[in-house]
Length: 222
Image (tube, rainbow, N blue to C red; front, side, top):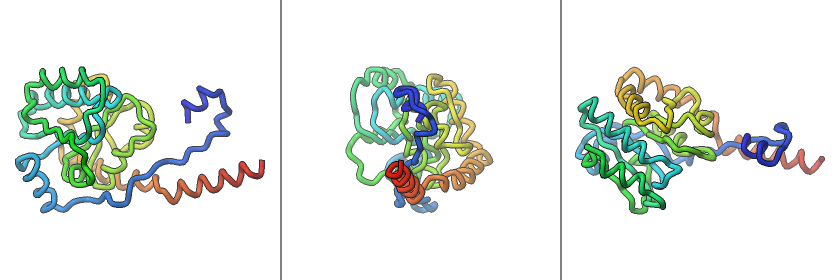
C-alpha cells in the first residue's frame, strides 16, 4: 500500500488492503511424521528451512552465511534445507556456498516440489530474509504448521509476522546467526509457536473476499 501511495501520489484512504492467506493444506506434523521427513532428507537431524526460488531478492546467500556462522559458534548438528529452483543472477549465492565451511550440512532441493508441506512442517524453524516481498506467504504457511519464523525486518514481512517471529536485519549474517541460536531455546520457540497461532488467524481468504466485495460496492456507488 505504501509503495502504491508513494508511486502514484494517492490519498492513502483510497487504498484498501486485502491480505493474502495460506492454503488450508498446511498443518502441524506429529512427532512420527517429523521423524520420517528428517530420516529421509537430513539423516534424522533437525533443520532450518527456506522455501522459495534462489535469486538475489530472496537473499539466500545471507541465510547460507548466517547458517555457517551459527554452525561454527554452536557446534550443533543442525542442517539447512533450501527448497526452491535455481533462478537467476546467483553469483553471490554460489560464492557463499563455496566459502561455507559447513556446506556439507546444506541440502538444496532444486527440483520441482509439488508438496512443500512436509519440508516446512518437519523443520525447526523457517528462515525467510528477503530484501523485499509483496506479502511473504511462506511466513504464514509456517505458522499454520506450528513452525516458528525468522524473517526480515523490511518491506511487508513485519506486518505479516507481527510479534510471532524473530525479525532480523537481512543485510547482517551475524544477526541471522544469533536468531538461529536464540530459536534453539525451547521457551523462545514455544512462545513463537503460540503467538503464531494467534497471528495466523488475522489472515483469511473469507475476510479478504469480504473486503473486495465491500470495496467493489463502494466503487460502484461513487
